[in-house]
Image (tube, rainbow, N blue to C red; front, side, top):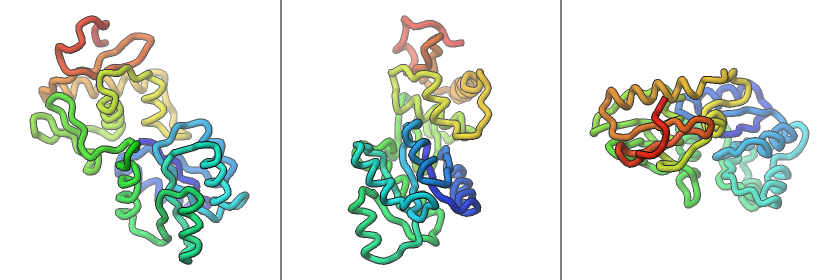
Length: 233
């Protein structure tokens, strides 16, 4: 899952980004309302974390403009403004949650996951396909009830494919979900992650298969349910 963090304090932004990435999120960070607007209009984020005291525009103005334009992306307001009136104003302006600084990283993670579990959100507690289950809260994959270790980006590929089980996922969509801004992405990065993931699933006796549809993308299915597509590469 990919998040946008709009925060002008660089050290604080790095702290939040590092903490969230340890929990399996892909995080883009920007420091101004203008760059936040540009990022939000370019990438389909699963959620946005928004500071209000931005150098070029109040965060609430940015939030209102998104809602007026019809954006439904969940927004968690992260700010030091602790007055009741400020919290009410933030929620009435379109914020989905409000967290005061300072805070515990565990609470921020829990609040983001709660937002993503709401109706229409992207986060379900456990996703199951075949004999593979993915606990999205614990970031744990189990095959035949046995936990297996999967690196973060391969886990991101698996999660996205499991959420779209039986549907083709273009390569560019996977790149968008597992890499943030500033990450060097080689032309075959996704292919490498998919190949390694496929081997891990096979070794663990998973009964799901990642199919490569050349020039189109990838498709996850239970074994023997896809017989007419090209063979995996």
